[in-house]
Structure formats: C-alpha cells, structure tokens
Length: 126
Image 1 (cartoon, one colour):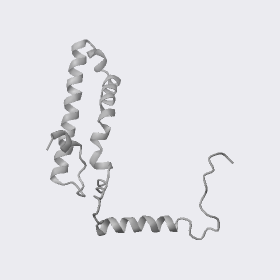
Image 2: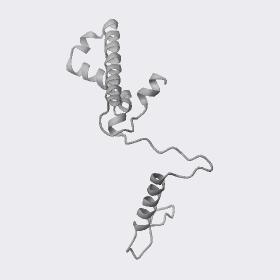
Image 3: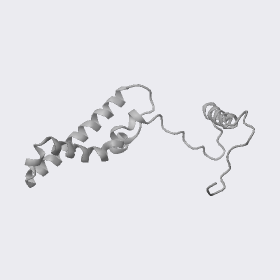
Image 4: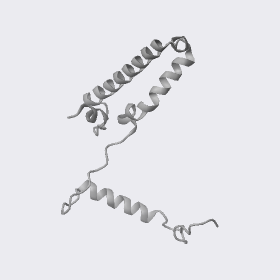
C-alpha cells in the first residue's frame, strides 16, 4: 500500500489500536520534521532573530499546523468511514438496511403531532 494512502486513511476500529497509535506517531513525526526543516531554512535566510521570539515560534507553528490540521485530526475527530456504495444487483447488508430504516423513521417522525406540514421553500423571503 502507498505510504501516503495508509497515513491518510481513517482507521474504522474503535479505540486506540496499535495501527492507529502508529499512524498518529507517524503523523506527529512528519509534522515535527516539516517544522524543523522550515525553521532551519528560515534561520539560513536570516530570519532567526524573529524565530527566537515567542510570537515568531507561534507564527511558524500556526502556519505549518493549519495545512496539517486535517491530517493530524483524521482518526480522532472523524467517525468510521462511510459505507461503500452498492454494486448493481448487490443487496444491502442487514446493518445498511437498518440504517436506512432508522433514517426514514426519523424523517417521518420529525413532524409527528404537528398540524402543519414541514416548511415549504418558496425561494424567497416572507
């Protein structure tokens, strides 16, 4: 498997498995390596005086962390991956069928007991 695909694929197993902990460690080491390389380049250019201040370090970490945010929080904020789409002629599994039933029941019961129907989108303001 491609290392980048392995690193960016969410782990569907609950809890902290060995694979998930290894992925988190690999992402952290990648983040630290990028920050260190960028810091060395900025020192080489002559911006070391700014990096020795607290706000210079904070700015560097923030500039690097923003692109890494999705990669760093992939396993901790995202639930299990979405179910795979069905192939033509394939029947849904029991879990997929129950999820569909639950969603339909929730939508049906959303306005239960309300005399008016759901709001209609007329395309403008009232």
